[in-house]
Image 1: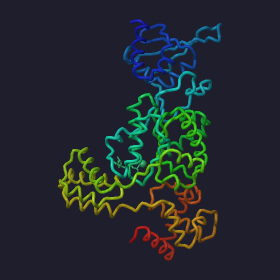
Image 2: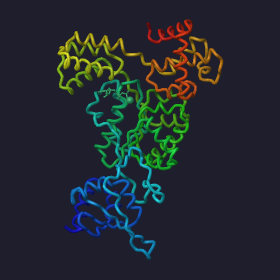
Image 3: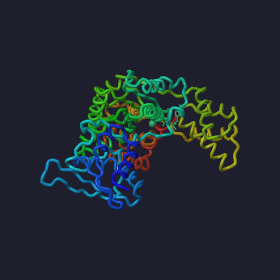
Length: 470
Ligand code: ADP
Ligand code: MG
């Protein structure tokens, strides 16, 4: 075998696995130089090539090479130093086949100084990224109904009439478990199916926030921004968590503007409509309203039946109509709950030899309803607590150290922990921009006081009863 032949085989394989423009810009200029046993030496035009390939395509290259030369295959680079005629060639050894995979999800900051930004190399606009989409959340698996039709059709329109809809951003909002994450993912998957050359990225707001924070710490903020600026379809889940985070909002705004100006598609989900979002910069909120805000509502009875039938069919399980009707009739608030009930029933049938009949459905539904905690938001809880104590919500959120205010604030935190899905950080942010240590302290204080102070205990229990409706 000759170096030429081996390299040509590798190129074939690489070509099938990278976008055309990447192939043309980065791989075609490479020249095979020599083959020495299992060591292939290739010549690349500049140092930049070597580093770019090492950073982004080493896995692919390794696979290609191992196919040709076996698992001990090695690669050596010869970098032509055109700017230094005295030493025309410089050898750089390939650093072994076990280099860790680049995690595109963490927008890999470049490794070396003279390799600041791989994403704005002239002539190359694209590199392929891992979309982080959940392959199970497809449109085929999403049952349509009057409750979600607008959002579904808007999503389909975006994928079919690429760049020609005014649904940008598409802002999908609605309560817990109504399919926001599923639908946003499904749109991303559909884009990739119809437009394989588009870079789609799904990211939760929390992950985005973490990435931003660590980019500030690591001084790679620019790389962070550049990474996001090269996305064609950016899906950001649960943007309500941007609330109160001014630094992240600024970056988000900047990325939004860049993508929007370049006619890239933005898809956001949130538990609230843009008009109801608090602690988010006005200019960002106004951007959210530019496109289409589509609400996901709770499914109606017929749609609930369809969802149940669909899930059963998917799991290959048979269930009588009367049982399906019973579940659809009793479980109204969200789809996640419907799934939970079906799963419990199927588990009972599988492990305890129960029949999937009305009796089992009754038992499990009753159990579910008893155990499911009401879903509140920190905002609702603050309002209820403030009203109870005859205070303003603004007072709860203020810096006031008045005993009565402090207690009401701490009780709000305690109830938020118990009756919402919010994290400690989120609770702190919502209740007067406190940090999570303050929240931990509040929870402990409330518990301790409930132990020693009967009157205080009664107050908290009364408030809890108001929430649970007992
Ligand atoms: P959200 O993000 O709004 O809280 P999810 O997208 O996580 O809700 O949905 C919760 C669960 O319900 C998921 O397992 C999802 O697949 C399912 N689900 C929601 N809506 C539908 C639907 N219309 N058809 C099928 N499954 C659905
Ligand atoms: Mg979700």
